[in-house]
Amino acid sequence: MNGTMAASSNRIILGPLVAAIDQGTSSTRFLVFNAKTAELLSHHQVEIKQSFPKEGWVEEDPKEILQSVYECMDRTCEKLTQLNIDISNIKAVGVTNQRETTIVWDKETGEPLYNAIVWLDLRTQSTVERLINKTPGRNKNHLKHKTGLPISTYFSAVKLRWLMDNVEKVHEAVLSHRAMFGTVDSWLIWCLTGGKKRGVHCTDVTNASRTMLFNIHTMDWDPELCKYFDIPMEILPKVRSSSEIYGLMKSGPLTGIPISGCLGDQSAALVGQMCFKDGQAKNTYGTGCFLLKNVGTKPVMSDHGLLTTVAYKLGRDKPACYALEGSVAIAGAVVRWLKDNLGIIQTSTELEQLAADVGTSYGCYFVPAFSGLYAPYWEPSARGIICGLTQFTNRSHLAFAALEAVCFQTREILDAMNQDSGIHLSQLQVDGGMTSNRLLMQLQADILCIPVVKPSMPETTALGAAMAAGAAEGVSVWSLNPEDLTEVTSERFEPQINPEESELRYARWKKAVQRAMNWETTEPVSNGNEETSIFSSVPLGFYILGSMFMLIGAKYIAAGQK
Image (cartoon, rainbow, N blue to C red):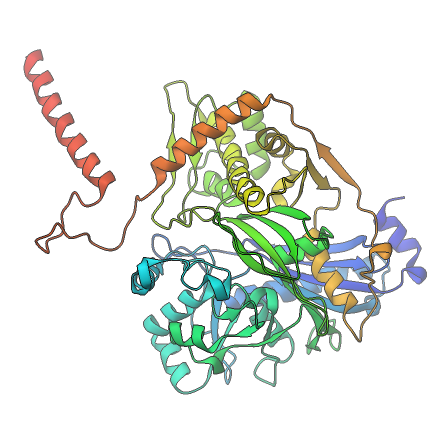
């Protein structure tokens, strides 16, 4: 009997349920789980519009994000009612969210003062370059000892600084003490717990650790970091653990239910994959790609371009656990780009078929550095590149190269993780939307030369948020004791090519990455006479010289043909 049938016939003995809001970069979902069996009973999903007002800018509408949560909640409750499941059995709600995405709103009107600036956004590149130039030795890791992070466009502090500098409404609201800052979790919890009528302004340690304003040792906002970015501490949310009652829902079908779990999406996936032991790791394939490894209760700093981040703190009196993280900006986003920008596929599933038709990229390599390169390079000036093209290359080869790019980027961060820890992972646990692509999973095993293990229930991010909510003190319907955790059924993909071929393809990829580097710089480079040289950008210089030689050559050829 399938889960839905069981749910409808065993209505009375279902026991407590826990819900999760999963607000991602490209969609919002609301999911309801059985707290005793971890079975997914029902869910609803709504896509989120992204806007790109200028090159490198990525924005979303905070009100649309909030509305999508209400819609998903209402529709899921309707579906549960149709299945004869009593929604009063829902005992708690957890929140998991796209991290770093930055929102500022007016606490008196409840209105956002600007669109949400998405984590992928690159508008702060000049701010970042200016900040790095101010540091001793122009060191992007200047704040890493406190934050675990490099100074990068990726994190919230520089986005918030940009909003305060460039948006008059934000600037005025900060001066008149009406501004509130938050990542998506804070915005949602504030709105759902009453908004301007005494809504709770809070965040959890995992989301706070992605702002560059949070000290991962003291586990609180750091006055020196706030001073460095010139951000008033009064606009920041209160930092709480990942599992405690923050407040009660104030409207909709779940009014009165506690919101009691909050984790940034990658931390939630780590919890949902039950990586509670030091050394356990998971890789999530979403808009980006994120490999996290649990390193226990003491933060470990990376020497190979990885981030140190807070993995979770599952209760007010529980210890915080830390993780090493390898972040890749573009994974699933490359599929969206091939669909929406190039139009070579109509649906995501079509990509797998196209790539499978040829089974090779035929020497074509695709580095999708649309937002620069994240781990292990942290190179914001890199840009996307497709190379190794011949007259034989077609859209199927490009589709295959796009899937390979996701796998090669994962290999780079896995290599960095193995170097940092000295212990090589023997298999990779995976989750996220892209894992439904079986060809991608097989390619990943081939390129890593280790097995890839995928749980049969793919919604591990939402499951992690539900587990945190259900386990919170005062709710206590979900046990996180190791002996009580349900056994996860999974599918395993074994490597099928010889390691030599894998190494050869990986070496070619690394060569392509070097070609993508240092493409875009915002600071003009002086030629010594305080004049900006047109040849200060090497790629631009080569391009112009190459174009001149081609024009001269063409002129001589044309003359010879007369």
